[in-house]
Length: 338
Image 1 (cartoon, one colour):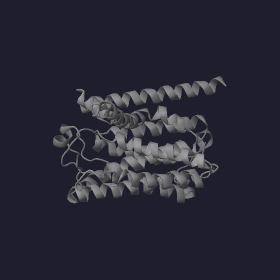
Image 2: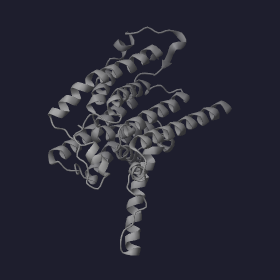
Image 3: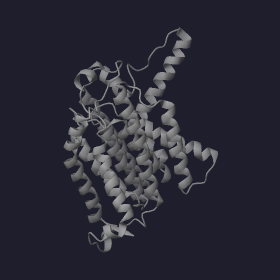
Image 4: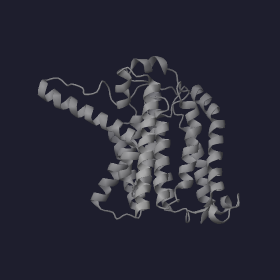
């Protein structure tokens, strides 16, 4: 099967427009349902005062578009292809939309439902707990196992462990990144663009329709998520985005590139791990735990170091964009030299 640049453009423009048009009604509905973000008392005090009353679970703004357009494209490929005409060199081969597309989409929805339960528990309980870490890891393990089973990879204990490390790691890394206005959204957009760039260099366009839909929907959401955010995506959004990025990288054998195209989420995750380990080790040595960072994840450390929220977000976005651009350039240069 072939898809043209005009058809890809259609898959970008339509989700973007519908996300923009549906955002305000969804935000108003979330306010009526009192879907309000609660903040931990140990977090930055500015967040409690500045962000109080902002609705969460705004992931519906982009998830609905992804479900609608990705499902329509998957189940009605022939009718979609007939919507526009294309000829000759404009065409990109996507084969038949294969199981990789379905695996990525279903994994996205699975993580979204997990996050939706987590968000709902937080709202109804009016605290910061939600699902426990063990419960989330068990669900992520199940999704990773299913991804491995339905992918073309051989099933072994090592393969299962690796799938879990990559997929759960990506899922939780983006979840931890979601702590400042527009931060997780912008990081996800850059990572998805970087991932598709790597796939394009391999001549693989099978996930291009799905990535176009997700990126367009996220841009529509970003308009309402930049500071001062009118809505937060919630765990339902950040877990789903981290999941789909991890799954797509894993099934396309690009998981090591996540260290480069998702450097900020990786660093955010590492900062939490290092903080916990450093606290436990120093507690055993000195009798009381000490902290390496002023607060983790990493973005809170910079906030408490005197940087404004906008400064942190913009700096992180520019840093990630630069790392991703350099990565794509080096990979492209290597291909040309072969």
